[in-house]
Image (tube, rainbow, N blue to C red):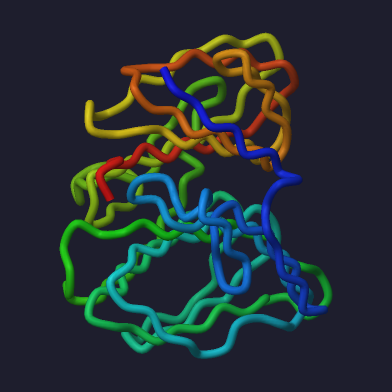
Length: 237
């Protein structure tokens, strides 16, 4: 097993008054040649948007864009005609494909919205743009890794154009559990949303990340109640 530890304090960032964003990987004005992604995973942005503010219309192409709200309400609109709000406990996917224009705004005029935006390189270029939003509440069982994204449209959760799987879990202190990777071609990137865990001797605290390769599985010890995201992606990108 090989690991690379990215402490939360090592992330890049941007602050624009209304926006506080931390970048696990190189993004916008933050560039680190050692942090340009993890396999097909390109971006994990940890965004805090003040009330009534947000990202106006902007375009994307040939990228799988996943948004996971952590608190507050995020209002979405796009050139495909999709308009609505996503909240904590939901997940949103937009396959940009041949090109799409969208906006993301805080749907609350007073309280901030906090969300993760994650980009994954697709395995098919120039697909027709698509949008999907799913409530995960019924899928999330405590003290286990719950699959919320896959390559299979028939699976529960959302799907993308890539051999990738996302799993989310809320774990109690003292739990020990094992995650098995879905493919021998994949690595796993563990992102700690909250709490504290230990994996292969690495102690991970809130917003820390750990890239794991060259293994079929890993074991996680929960030191403090924790919410964990695992991004299981091909490493050949």
